[in-house]
Image 1 (cartoon, rainbow, N blue to C red):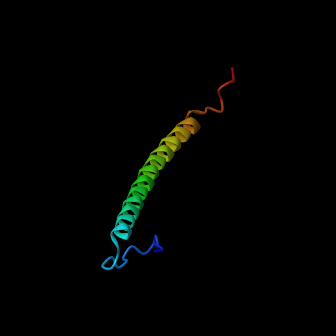
Image 2 (image 1 turned 180 degrees about the vertical axis):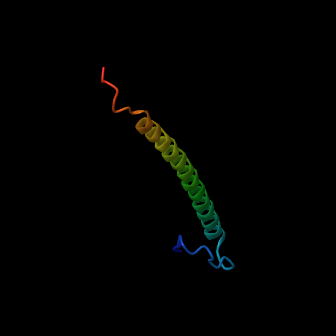
Image 3 (image 1 turned 60 degrees about the horizontal axis):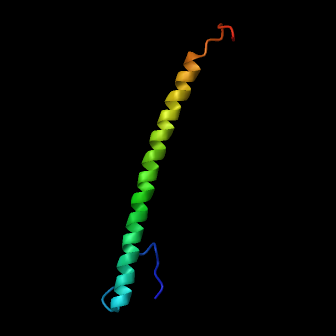
Length: 69
């Protein structure tokens, strides 16, 4: 039996026990992948925000009239 990752509304009335187990395992894997992607997205957003603040502060702290040491 071929599973479609994008169509999770498959008919599970006439599945064998092994097919049901595989289907449930695939659903769990898809859900864990979604959670992992969301977690990585949150980390990346925090990192981008932190870097933007650092670069803004760096540009503000540059004084064009200060002599280089």
